[in-house]
Image (cartoon, rainbow, N blue to C red; front, side):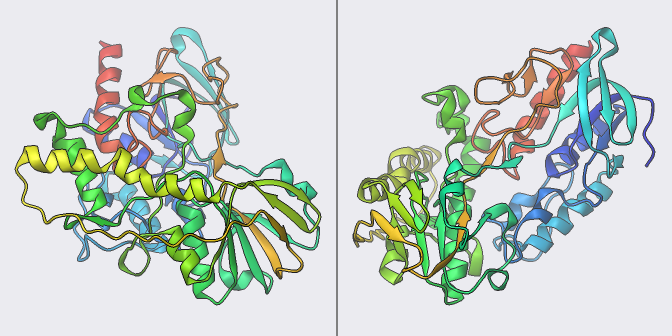
Length: 417
């Protein structure tokens, strides 16, 4: 698709979020264009590793304007399947997408809206919706340069499969969703696995007879009717909490819990937070025990009470909760010689940083987030959709546009009135 000289509304990013926004604008009969830097549709899912699966059930791919109608709503799509579904979504909603179009600079242009410079030329837009998510730049700590050159180091973003790694043991830095899934995959392939445990909590795959996401989705949709609500960005203790890792669980093999204590009992080696590196020698904080305790307490302290309250107030018949406590306490590991342990690879499952430097306007806060209220910025005509904690923890998920998109559309309508 060729680029027009101007467009009423421009959506940047053709993942499921950008396509959902396109669906909303089409229903509102708003002229718009979606630009996507990749040469193929499918969003960031096509960047994931070979054996990746969704951690949310298939029914969560019920995008606005296209409900999931497959045969396995409670299953978990593979990387290829979710990529294909997102690509198909563009066709279903008739999204006008210009592929291979990278936005290099966006500058407010007064009453004319915005001037956008791309690798394919320039255009202007009266309004812009940025739908590029919050996972832009692989985050790798400076410690990497102090580790022996003998060891292969990659970010989880660049991991493809087990056989692509050098033979030997693997150390994974980080224990959020990606870290625990890669640990399981490599351990099942016969690799000795070490994990440097971080601050991520965990939630059960199923709770009181249903998948955990089924409860969360119901509470977001219907909880207000019963005086029950999940936290929103306004309830967070501080701005940095938006960067907290997502609770860990897995969609592999039909979906299951991921418990670090069980990992250790099965033969993986756990350590606390990595604090220093000197060639082959790594040092870890003596904090494994409290880190595991915080991981175990996450669901109990932050989620369980909300679900139980919703079940009671809504009068839902649900079986009692199962007690699946694992008490194994792995030994504390504070020093590790990589060579002696046979570790050939370190995978940095340390998340991503934000990159909005291409926006030529002073809208970023001290953490790099665009200042916004539910996606509406202080720059007239500039909006965001799919941000981490744009409104709630679901905002950056597959179902996020269902909750945040209609609000954004309403604000755009009000601004145009």
